[in-house]
Length: 159
Ligand SMILES: [Zn+2]
Ligand SMILES: [Zn+2]
Image (cartoon, rainbow, N blue to C red; front, top):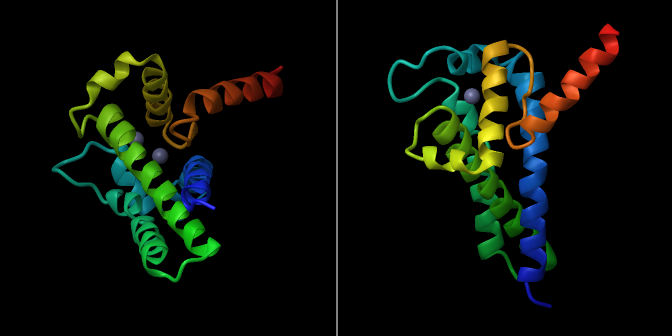
């Protein structure tokens, strides 16, 4: 069996799962336990970096280790799964960097992405999080749907 038939689907599933994991971390951990670091992202940045960047690179060592294991371990199904996990995490990390830090916060010259309606909606939903502070949407790529879901919840509880 071709190794790519294992690691490519694993990578895609992991990249999608990372959005849910990031949403959970952002809502439950960044805005409570690690607010001291995340706070820097909700204030005006002075300089090239912010303390919150430490949270953004938190998963990189795990992804690197998984890819290295996938490249160097003896051939096995598990090795391909590790490789897929590392690639999936990296895909999500790069996409998050480009869309969140680049498009939404202007740290990379990728504003042209906003011509794609989906990315414009993702940007607008994330800006709602910044405007509201401690409330969602906490996800990025699913932000527009999370926002819609929250609005429905609020209507239901207020009526
Ligand atoms: Zn936040
Ligand atoms: Zn942000």
